[in-house]
Image 1 (cartoon, rainbow, N blue to C red):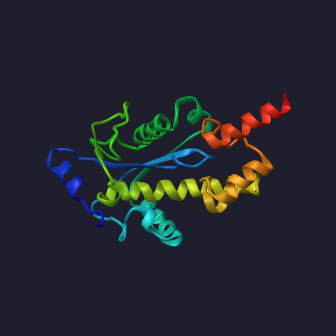
Image 2 (cartoon, rainbow, N blue to C red):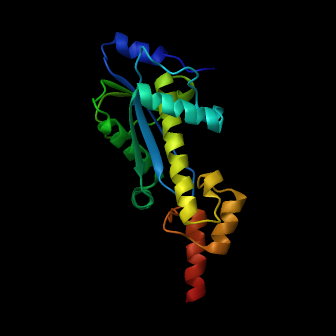
Length: 209
């Protein structure tokens, strides 16, 4: 399966002049923000090879992200660890999507949302699409720019906090990351509401009593 313009075309035919694809990345990591992107493709300048970001190589994602930024309307939002811990990861990811849509230069008439849950406060009509990044070119584009932006942010954070492997694991709970958590402790960029981090903090607090 490769994404196409089926859902976008249905939207255009129903009167939606501007259709945006929306996706998020970073629900599963133990560290770093959750990131969402909203993308409105130019129908006459769609980059070749758009696909679910997980199916693309690092180099191909980076090249496509550059092409998307050059031809499409793009908004990218990072929702912080503090907000994730205060809200929960599902609500934080929806908040990122809502903010990304709101930050587009022009508000869309229709948002195609990856997944099966509609964010409660999106600023325009929306449609959820399960596995949307593999079905819709607009969502695929959003998945690419969101992942590239978040991965680059995690590389920057890895330079500030070496040893956790964020430059390669992007904050996900790999063996290297979990070992570093035990050996080096919890950083300000770790999600304290996530069990592996919370358990370490609990052990530290218990030891210090």
